[in-house]
Length: 212
Ligand SMILES: Nc1ncnc2c1ncn2[C@@H]1O[C@H](COP(=O)(O)OP(=O)(O)OP(=O)(O)O)[C@@H](O)[C@H]1O
Image (cartoon, rainbow, N blue to C red; front, side):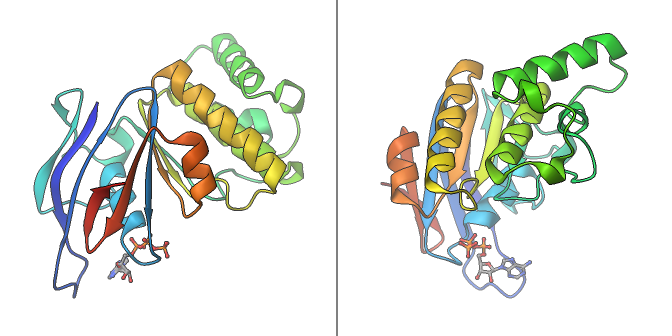
């Protein structure tokens, strides 16, 4: 379980700090909604380690991860768009998720398997710039598979997608979350995404997360 206990944070000039507490189970999607400017990205930045809380704990399966820098956290982040390097192929983008020093043959096989798992086996050699928005999100998810970090943070990941692609990408996130036991935290404005995906839902209001 991922558990934030009263993570306290204030941006410069902010008079009343955020107090974030939440629990996210393995294999489940935990949704965060809230008005524009309520602090959803701030929460993700704290979970990812881009911001540091002034107090509070962040535990993953009982281990405090709050002091770890972003690159050492067991956390992947997927944004609305721009997750890929456009000039690299799909396979090369996925390969960025491989551990350093991995044997070349093994690495190639892992990349192939990850692309196959997200349904893009045929697209390995295509430059990312030629892929659709949905395909790009799948490639980013394949890279996440290789990193296999147990916490997946999603910041409006379906916003740039058309309705049909949105549904299939959503289904893929649900399936990967279950299969790999990820603690997936989804920030979304969309009630239908939350209804379709989330086992748990918090609303961010007045600087606090309220179970919805
Ligand atoms: N670096 C910063 N310095 C000062 N204030 C900031 C900074 N970053 C964000 N804020 C403020 O903190 C508040 C929360 O911002 P945040 O981006 O977390 O909201 P959000 O809920 O993600 O909004 P949106 O849905 O519009 O993306 C806003 O009032 C914003 O102006």
